[in-house]
Image (cartoon, rainbow, N blue to C red; front, top):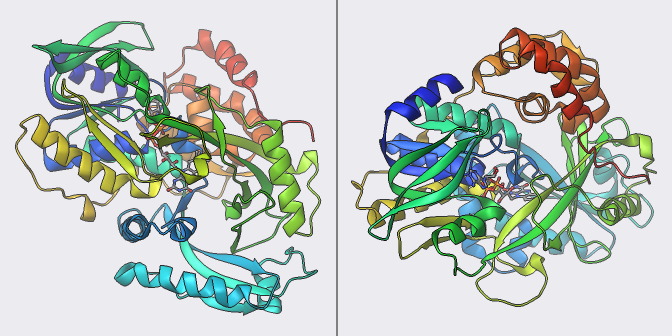
Length: 494
Ligand SMILES: Cc1cc2nc3c(=O)[nH]c(=O)nc-3n(C[C@H](O)[C@H](O)[C@H](O)COP(=O)(O)OP(=O)(O)OC[C@H]3O[C@@H](n4cnc5c(N)ncnc54)[C@H](O)[C@@H]3O)c2cc1C
């Protein structure tokens, strides 16, 4: 991917079949589907790819055990199928992971195991390993810091895990390889119309502030928690359908919490689920489900969310979490769709995706989850073909391998606490279109999530590499570093 070449293509190719607004999992998934079917496809992201919710997930590729309890079998079955396809199509980033649900009473193990065996069965041919009942000793072997007092045993089941931002970047690479175009730092400002029908958009390049128009037979709005803002560009009177729910995580060293299996507590003190997940030699502990009314582009965890996570982790694990144990924190906003007005817990809102086609032909897709991005892409492109009279073409993403442009890690790491080499960082700068230090440190590598302090330490040398590769001018280097250093770390005082 080369942004200058992409911009030239954007200037010379005037008429696209499909314009997709938003470069998170949903938009990238739709663009991957449309481009691989052979539609002339362009995707525009106003910031960096996956800078919104799609780099801030719990990093699970899963059917959603907790939705089993809500009785939504088709959602779980569909997501388990997508989980299986992701193992096949992106094996470099998506791996199986075992999960332990600890039990305190003798009957809890068999109770969870019955539901989880059904979960295994729903996965059919694409299943992983079978669910197993564990005694106390086995449970402690898998997670030595499990609180042993009152521990009866547990259940082990299997799901998937991935690197969310890396998968998003690899989607962008694959879109280019399939003949489509995906560009970051281009914001859609207005929708243009012809005889009352949406016919394209006016966009602004965040780099130079230049404004230009794009024509497309179909425009797909895939802007997550910002979906209503694009729907309102189309129709000022459109009601809101998005309810945002914040989830937060803290990141700990694996030495603090050694584990090769993940821990899941389905019901904590207030009924919310708690995960502790080994990831890249760290452990991610979360999550929460807090309804929010203000939609921020860079949401930060609320102190009470961190308090909830720390308190519950300490309830179920024999550890004391101190300020210095927290390597980073992050928060994301779930784009839940609510077609009914009114209040209520966002934990109860459906995780299914929703597609709407407005009178002027704007196609909006929202909801769903990372795991189901492929099916969401297939569904929305099917609908777009019909609504915009595009040639109907067969979806090919079930067997489409996801490419990568990042070489595998070399031995010499750029920092003792980070698993990245200079070669990897240089390759990302050259071929993965990062424009800012944060793009490299947060999403081309996951340095900021893995260890905020280590990311700060390597920032000057990464800035040097960006200057060397011509992404940042020497005269802008100091300002770029300052901007990076003063960004909120989100780590509150405990
Ligand atoms: C805390 C948390 C944990 C989660 N964990 C999991 C998990 O483990 N597994 C799982 O499967 N799912 C998980 N999810 C759900 C999943 O992360 C989301 O469903 C998914 O990332 C949403 O992607 P999206 O593309 O719809 O939205 P986003 O990723 O937010 O993308 C929308 C994009 O649109 C862009 N945009 C907005 N306006 C414009 C404009 N005018 N012009 C151009 N671009 C624009 C934004 O910049 C943004 O990048 C989790 C969600 C949360 C909040």
